[in-house]
Image (cartoon, rainbow, N blue to C red; front, side, top):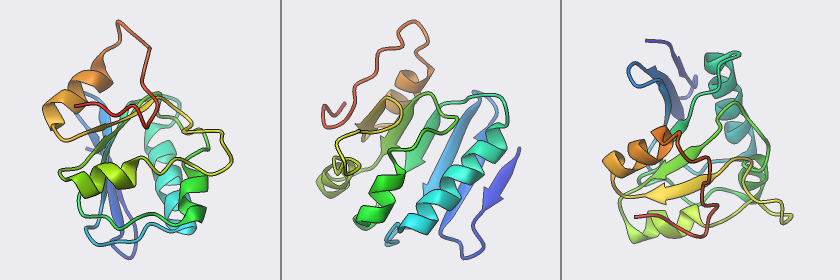
Length: 138
């Protein structure tokens, strides 16, 4: 299973087989900075290569991303859909901090507290209609 880990342990990216979803796990308590957001996007793109895969982002316990990090979330990557997985109301609030500049997220993005629901949404190829945040899912 292909993986990439940040040298400081800030995140880990894994291509899950099956179902072919990329999982990005941030270290709990971490404040995501602009350079970390760029490094994570590059890691996802490198693992995906020329094959776009949906992205499941484990963000439980992550601190509020910096403005520079949120700006990076507006850049397109090889993920056609992004599910943000958290477990608390605090995680949900942090997830709605859209990228500055009004452009929004680069791909349909939704927040979930259930991994099963997040995976179902990511794998739903019958409908390419995603809800951009802040219209948060279950």
